[in-house]
Image (cartoon, rainbow, N blue to C red; front, side, top):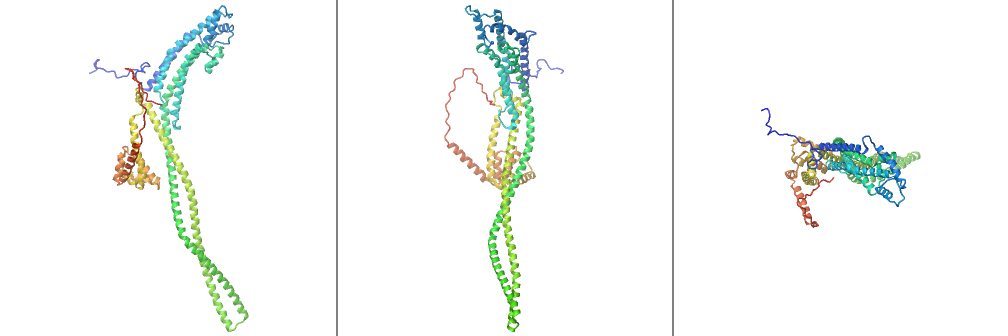
Length: 588
């Protein structure tokens, strides 16, 4: 069969979206909004060129148009003693005074008619010639404000600078575009009802008025200024389109940069944690050593006192021995000199024996004193070591405080990076998805309700995990082995996880339990409260589950006993049949 029957053939294509249909059907994509914006701007610029040709003439310019005002203005303003034409009332007064035969004011009638014709032409052209373009750009501005969103606030984290800057930029562009469009008719209103001065123009138009010598009669440049405002509005639309087109690309660059920063910050956080753990281990080791040293010194105090008492006695005894020895040596010398009878000889021998005995006792006493000095020196050395350890402990505690502060700072920075990366990815997906345009068109919430339910579910698991961390103590490794994993993890992998957590967070069981449960929730894609409760029961820690349930019941009971909130009755007016109320769920 070569061809399908004409009656059954289907054309699988979508029609090209137009500006007029954008209000009744959702955009096919952001690119279609950009295309429509460019088409509208091109059409407005084309109409503006035709309007300028119609106003200035085929070969006319703003300068040639301004020159048409010079001579007639001088001929009607000088007799009226006016420096310039700033309001329609001035022109009306001049015309009435000229027509009044009782008034001495006389102006050149042809010049008056010329100025009246130019003023009417300018006001009519500004009001009628720009109306379609102003309507088109105003309507387009509403569509762009609705669909070209940043999904961000004006203020936020420094890492969200692209999103916050774009939000500021789009608001500034919207304000500038709206101001330029409103100024076109506002300036005509000022001339007709109040007064129009050159100060109402921007700097470029002020300089042009001075160059063409109509700064005192700005009505002569009103059409030119209106054209400039319309061009500025078109330029603002194009800038907004280009900024919105580049926005997702810049977001992707920021996401990549932040992910690199996250890797570096993760490494810094890990190093800070390791340093804090090492300082904590050193502090605990020093505390334990100091405690043991204090116990040892406490036990050595009696011995030290006994040694000191013994040393005093030995020094007294040593002194006595030296004195006796000197006395006996002196007597011995006397006995040698005085004589050598038998009785003296016996005394001499007895004295000699005592001297030998004293000389024998003296080295023993000195050796004992030396031993006592060594023992006391050793005890004093232990006290000095204890003092040095206490000083080292103070230094380590100071380093521990700084390292913990540094680790906490790194952790906060890492959490901020995680949050900002998640936020940027969320914004990027919202900008890239056509489903977002559908939700905006139908005034539906951009963020899915399922995410909110999931968040509540995660909050319940978070509460239970925090409670278990404080209660489980050193049994966290056993709990980690009882927890289920999906996808499943082998026994060796689980053991490796436990070793890694134990080595990174030494001697702090609650922190180890916290990181173990965090890793479980990260690795187990189906983590829920029931899994954790079952694991606690399987490891025979049902008491933790019961204690948690009891605390939750008590808290819920307290919430129920509190007095209910009083709400004010609000009566809504009846809606007319067929009336439709539009709810805007988006709040940016």
